[in-house]
Amino acid sequence: MIAGTFNPVRKRLFIGLLSASLLAACLLLTAIWYITANPVRSLFDQVLLLTLGVSLLGGIIVAGFGVGGIVLTIIYARDISAFRGPMRVALNIFFPLALVLGRFFHIEKDRIKNSFIEVNNFLVRSKVLNLLPRQVLLLVPHCLQKSDCPHKITVDINNCQRCGGCVVSELLNLRDKYGFNIGMATGGTLARKFVREYHPRGIVAIACERDLTSGIQDSNPIPVLGVTNERPFGPCFNTQVKLPKVEEAICFFISQRDKLAS
Image 1: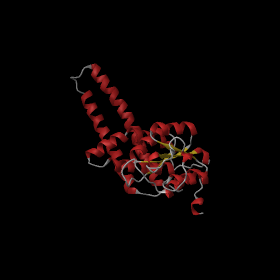
Image 2: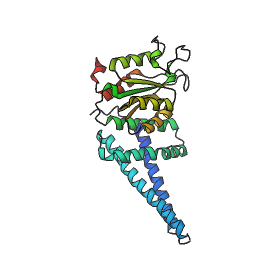
Image 3: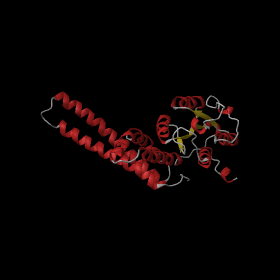
């Protein structure tokens, strides 16, 4: 099974922070247990703390299975369906805590988010998906269009004149070649509108680390393959993307990898 390019360093960062988040939650649970056992506390306080502690314990157990599932999926490069729910809990609930810990260790947010995207992409690629082209949606950011282009394509991407001045024309050529749906989003609201409109079973999203991480979490449980854009002129301005990465992600969903070689 093809599970994507293996990059253990990127994955290790997020998984390490996820594990550290679990450890922090365990320490918090220990503190709650200690306070609950303090006889000075009133019965109401003890019941409240006990309820909090039991809820936290449940979250730790589920997330623990989730982290274990992520590690096993990466090791064996195959989807383990029994761990899907716990993995979602670990990725979505403990992700903010991982960011907080990263700030504590002076790790750049984009590095952590890149690692999260790498882990997410690997988990998606571990699944067996054989979608029809019309079940796949390519979401692209409006900043891929050249800033001085006179043609407005955020309303309808087909307004692009395909002059070749930016990568949009090449993305449309890919759309024509494979037959998937495509939407150009100016933000999360429009991206969600495209998802409601096309009802995709698989999404390839091009965006910066910040938008990709939030988009991947918002789209759950729809599998999303994230492709980070390049920003040689700064954020949200004349951004670029490596077309082979986009094509490879599209081909993963529609099982047409052989077209890459043609």
